[in-house]
Image 1 (cartoon, helix red, strand yellow):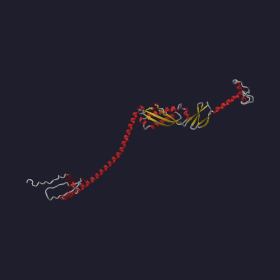
Image 2 (tube, one colour; image 1 turned 135 degrees about the horizontal axis):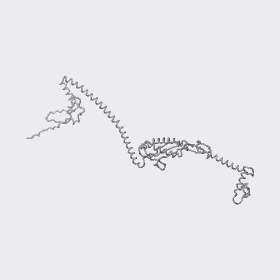
Image 3 (cartoon, one colour; image 1 turned 180 degrees about the vertical axis):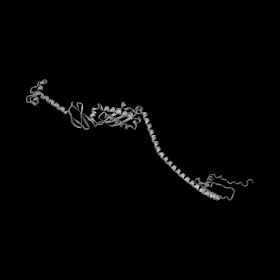
Image 4 (cartoon, helix red, strand yellow; image 1 turned 45 degrees about the vertical axis):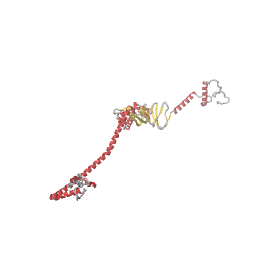
Length: 388
């Protein structure tokens, strides 16, 4: 009988009887359900046996349980299947099925995600002194901030070999960093040794994590910051500035030396060449003078007077050819008016043009030229009629 049958009133749709005004009877409701299942699965008017209902329920639950074993592994992930807690297999991306819980379990692990670990600091918080402060090889304290980038290389090892992977990696990285910094000096850590320290920390930490079979691959290690403690920051900055000034002065001095030394060497080489040339010139001149003197000596031994006269005339000719000569003819009077005509005419003999070779009267000529001209003598005339 349908619910909307005309004239149905308050009849029960299963039994067709009138429903009382009070709450429904539970026993009657169960009997109605049994009769309904009987019409569906049994003969008309007969209820199916209770065992059939139980098996149907069991079958439905079993189907639902079987369906819970399907799982999907996305790209870049791996599925780790365990049976009663023991590793069974690792599945690749795609649709898979495992025996549902509690027999087997599938854990999805992202093996392509880049994970980051901050050591000595936290983003948005700042420095963590318990991790950042460490002792160097020269017994100084530095504050070091380190960033570690890693990924999961083996999902099975990552899940089963270590209980807290990130905590373990943090402790291993801190231990490796303290070991490397402890072998280095403070200046090396703060200046040119940052990249080398990061490389050493990466190699040492990866070696330890591989020995633990952690399934973690360290991709990169970056030394974010390395500074002295805040208490000595000002003094250290002054020391750095002084070191930079020292290096700058050294560079400037080196540049000046590179500029001056080659020029000085060139000048020295030029002076040596000039001295060598002057030496050869003077030696050749001396040899020529000696040869000429020997020739004159041979002539002098044969005719002394003639040779002496010729030498005198040669000397006078050489001197007078380079001087100004003024002839004054005084016909009347006894007074001689002397004027420095050579100075008035602008002629000034040069001592560098005088002969300097032996036998040319150079010494005598230079003495004549170096003498001061005699004072000008004015004619003195007596007054006419004086004493008259």
